[in-house]
Image (cartoon, rainbow, N blue to C red):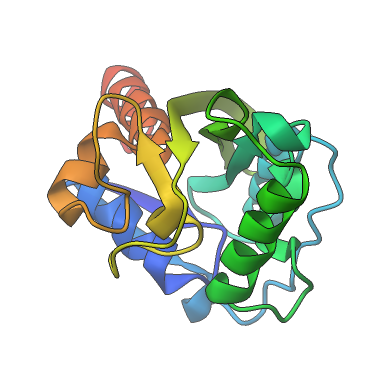
Length: 201
């Protein structure tokens, strides 16, 4: 079994990663490691932030560490919220606050159908002992719904409609989302590389 520590305290994210990876991996996160201080996301890209978090945690933990940074890029908003997706409506904003702000911004710019095109992007960084081993990227194209729909997932899931489907990520069953999402694509690429390189040995 390959053991990984995810440099996050977001239990939703940890559970999702575990479900994507399956039983041959054991996933833990920083909830069990209060000695690891909060790692600021000071990068200007998803890749920079993922690297920062993975490297910082891997210097403090004797384990294979992964970290991801992901977010939503909306064409009509010039790619916003992008790397600021998590704090788009303020540091203490709820998911609903972030969704409401994004829908208000799209209404303000009078976004057409083309302008509502968007993508979720995720970069996963893999590190050990303070050294970056590799990064993996996953992208899923889609569009922004007129209103929030569905209670599954988290973040912007209730307003993102993946290309080729009519339901939002918030309406799709978890097992479907976890086969097509940006995080699923990046995590599956990570898993394939770990199996080949046998980092878990």
